[in-house]
Image (cartoon, rainbow, N blue to C red; front, side):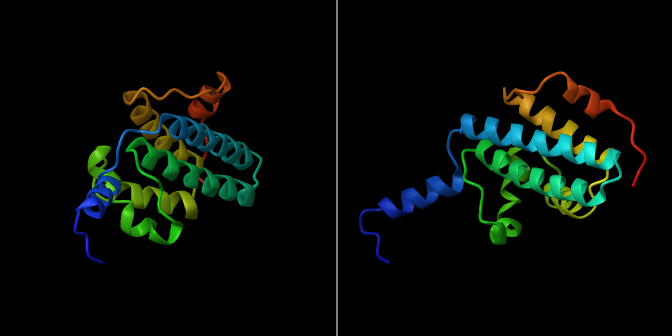
Length: 150
C-alpha cells in the first residue's frame, strides 16, 4: 500500500495513540461492569459458583471496553486482547502485566475478595478521571461485605 499523501499514516497513528475519552461509552461500560460485579458477588453468596463465574466473566468484558474507551480507544476483538492489553498499563498507571493477570483471574477464579480488590482499583481509577457510577448506595454494601475465600 502506497501512502503518497501521508493520510493513512496519520489515521493509523491516531488510532494507535488514542484520542479523547469517550465518556458515554466509559460510563455505560463501567456501570455494566458494576452490574456484573454485583451479580457475581450475590451469586457467590448463594453458593452459585457457575453464576458467580459467568457474571464475573461478563463484567470483565465490560471492564475491558470501559478501560479502552477511557483512553479514547475502541476495545480490541477478544482474540487480540492479549496483544493489546499492555497498551493500558502505562496510561492508567498499572504495574506491568497487572491487567492481564487480573483479567485471567477474573475469568478463571473470581473469588469475592479478589473481585472487591479489583473493584477498589477500578473505582479509584474512574474517580481520578471524573467517572462516577450510577448505582444506588447498596453497591457500597457489596464492596464492604466480608466473604470467605472460595
